[in-house]
Length: 287
Length: 349
Image (tube, rainbow over all chains, first blue to last red; front, side, top):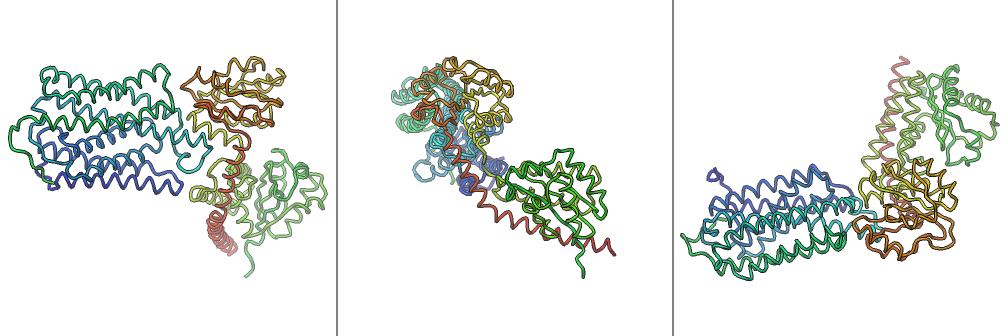
């Protein structure tokens, strides 16, 4: 089916990034005019970007015959895709005002930012997951859980902005349109719980591979991944015990997300150091 | 060509030029307003009429066979209310023709209101129109005039910022509470003291869904009375400190000479409800809440000055929109004026 599509995956990724960028600019301009943006237009723009990005990921996946998570560029694209997908699930259900604009902003940074360093989209040998579906599922779930953490950090940023507005007695502009503190705090709690569950599941699937391929998983990759998981788990436990709430909880989730993104570098370098022996020629992806 | 609509008029008094004590003398009850409307309609030479009677204005809109009828109406009204014509003429205003159109459009858009841009007047105007219409006191001209004024008001509201932001203390509090708690139906409110502003604030919160209101005052009878009027409960003044953790919104307006709520007390209270924010509104003078309370995590403290400055800034922002609104309304007034003239000409032919 994808053979009939003349657009290359690279072009589709660029168009998707441009549409996300357009959505973010739209939100920014309307907010600078001190008005609330139309949710319908924002939803339509994100929908357009999401569909084009889905097409791009499918084209890339069809080419490498696996989930496209083989280099930093693909990871960033998949993360942006997960983030927008989660917005579609959360946005209409909880009607969090401005979440669309914030999602568009982060999706633009991730999808357009991944083009800045061309070496990120380097070619890699086929069979990156060694034909093991468990490890493919582990990788996809891990990045999907990062999608949860990405949207959680957005909700936390919105919480901090709203709280700053209320503490400093600001009531105009963006403060007027942000959701309430309670709504944001409750949403953050739910997102944290779901993200921790998905990341735990991802690590459980990864453990199946790790047990039988102990030597293929470097210690620093394992340490980085486990530390991030432990970090989120600790924040979650402290939250349940009401020891970490509101502002400190928001700051903790933002810091953890930055660390989680930074840890991807460790995961990547681990992959480089133990790249499985080529089962065929290196795939040169048409961009 | 003679003016075909020369007898479209409005005669009235409003808060702009008439002091409260004089407005009280002109004030009508709803039944008196209906009676006056009926009487005017039966008056020879008055084809259509409508009486708008609110706490800030009393206006008689009409279409008569000649403009001199306005003088007769002045006399009729003064006789009915038992006020001297001299007093009425001192404060009353009247407009005719296009000016009447412009006036009703400005009234319906809230430009002529005490709180610029308020929308309550539109509801009152709609009610007055419905009552006059049901009583067959309005005809084609006034029907058209009021229907168009409602449309114009809606357009002005959506195309400008004339209604943006809250301009009363009560509504500013509701806005802030919504930014903290979202829906207010689950929020618990404690009123400390039974001042008028705090009562109005509590009423504004109640109108937005707050169902749990508790009142505490030095005089338990006063607290009980206010609690009863708000559909809430009263607690003894000595007990409120021990129950602070249960309340999301605390409105203070006591006459106490010293601070009632200290930072240490609030910090201790917040430890018992770490996930629930607390919104403190200090309407008392001297203040009931120690300003250092603001430093406590998850506590939002607003005093009377903070709330007034928000209300005033919103009001200024609304005033900045007046010219934009006038432009929209003038366009509507001219179109309507031409339509009515054409219609009257056709009627005469």
